[in-house]
Length: 470
Ligand code: GLC
Image (tube, rainbow, N blue to C red; front, side, top):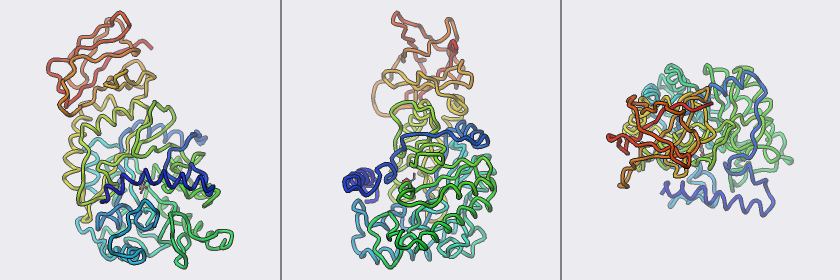
């Protein structure tokens, strides 16, 4: 059911958006997580440097974990009564909310093993991470001074690792990964966002701000303070990944300027990702569950789930390693990074279904990572058939042609060809993972035609390495 929910989410969000546009209530852009249309380069030198470093990492993990993981339902969203949500079959809306808030007493991940998470991510070849410190439901996966709705007041409170976020960040940092803090700007548990005296028809704050300005001001301080504690207490942070794109001016102004200035006082060079809100606080763009059609040369990241949900469910349908590797190749060739969604289970570990697939991706990256990490996009990034994706080394003289693994029973292609990225005359072209040379020629139309080696296996794919004229 939640899978269906997920699939319906985009379609229905679109309908909501349409309705809201028609009714003139909101500006289209910021309501759903549509990618923003314009990019603004940061001016802070330290931020530019972090961005440069981040753009070399290419592959990261986003971990959704929270109260919703306990029953394995969609992350937070059932708390809204938006039309795209299938209501709980037995509980009334109020009963559902009460039950959901009550999950705090069931959150007890006794096997919580952040080191396993970090190890799995490292084995997969992931180089950065983003962790949900607080999703829209408001449940904090860290011990916040500003609310009791947190792990520190959950059934897990007495555990030594109750300040969950600290242990998660430390485990990944220990393995050399860049650290990203996911934080939801809206908070449906806060009485200053969703005031209990009123109905909660949708994701937005549920009262008139001009009528109750003190309430909204309290909310602003709350967000400021929570971001302050996350940025000051948990060591070096590289990315502040702010979700809830509808929570932005003019509808919901949380004075993000001061929040970000303060965050950067603690974390110089911090990359801030105010998702789907174009402007100076969206240091990279985040198309969700999709890849842009063309190459995009400004910084961006596709976030995609590894199953059909962000969080854990008891009926996961996994995407295959071949599919994920092909996605990674396409994303990187188009100039972006891939942030892959994984949901740890209610006991606190990443289950085998994820682990075996992630390891397989890691094996491919071990052999072929040179074509991914630290590469630059090259203007000719694919061929007409989209059967090969090109990346280049930093100075643009070496090209990597990634023929990704493919599944299914289609015949094995024996050749691959492309226009542009023409190999230097007489240059040796080789298979990156084995070093073996391959035969190639330029035909009369200027097409480079490569004979794939006899031992080529389509479920493994391969990477061609060659020089071009700069
Ligand atoms: C979407 C979902 C949100 C999720 C996020 C992750 O915006 O609505 O629940 O956390 O994607 O990218």
